[in-house]
Length: 251
Length: 287
Image (cartoon, each protein chain N blue to C red):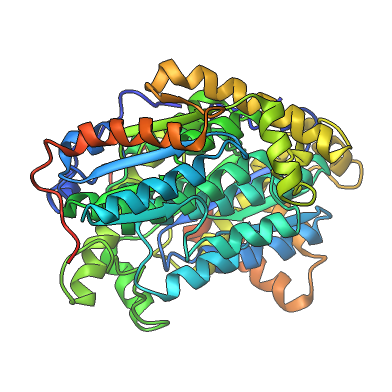
């Protein structure tokens, strides 16, 4: 297949200005929009959601217009994802594609317009979650990265690094059992859910570690006390808001 | 062994896919469904097991796409990826198992329609090709080609203007007719480009459906005969025929009376028997 030399400048582009709307990461860089995008990443049990919610409250209290977007929450797509998971119909490829579809809907209708409008957007999980999970399921590393080429580049992507055993310990006390796909039971690493979860999350951690230099993820030591982590997060976020003159404030 | 367009999905085995993958492509209103509805019983009559499939028919994403299209809030990237999910679900769960079982898979549209629609909506051509690089290379792509001028009456006097077929999400303004023209023109231009890149066999879809079908029969026959094992087994039960159209006639005798007599007419119809696929618009013909 021809994938390199076929860039087309046909008559159609006249109708559609490509700038800023093309599904390529480079067009949606942080400098293109007045808004700010902060995302948190990490395995289940790393405490990232707690940290994001503390950040959210702090930003609101300081008067910023803040919007929160969660992984897998598109109104248009989530029923399909739910169906696929419930009926165990998802393969690594369709698992990847349906999550990309969900993300695309949130990007197109929420995240990008908000960034253009000058909002502070907070995302609990972002494209790096897909890169880690999909590659752990055997999808091609390059293919998954290209798939998410339409994403906006985050201002800061925090990675909450935690030893696997610590995270599992937090999860086991926090809820009962693991779900089919989150334990990676679909790829047959082990029949025992806890063991499968351990092996699968281990693969995901390996992928995250590789992504730290690749995407310049900001590592937070998630074994530190909650307050210490939050202080670090706020300090970093603060430096990216100080120079922002065109951010929206809450009405 | 069967090929993909570059990438292989996890767990996808490409060996032992004995069946044939035959694609019928074309814009809205070109008569794809009509042709497939005739091809299927004909092939089954010849003793082939047939699976037919098409866009939004996956168990996973079909309903989701239909629901999403009811509203006015389905974005371009989301749409492209939703269709890709539907495609891959059918590829993995229907098409590949059927090919492994030796079926002839007739697919109403394939990655080409999906790529054309995405590109016309401003998606990066390289990006969308990358997504579909895991698709199987089919045994043949029959492209039913129709000009916009020929397309308009077919659409407006049958089902009327559809929001998405009129590209209302692509073009500004409320004029459905103008948008339909612009959208379908852009799609056709993209199809013509793809037809060169992906070796489509182009058929003039502006003639009578029966004539198109006669041409398709001959072309499908050639695809099946490329498979020596299939041909050998089939010939054990049949007399050798003088030329391809005669063979169609001969096999068609076993069809129900009405269908069979019609088919004989088409096969010997001067236009159907002699014309090569319409080549009047500088579309290169392959094979």
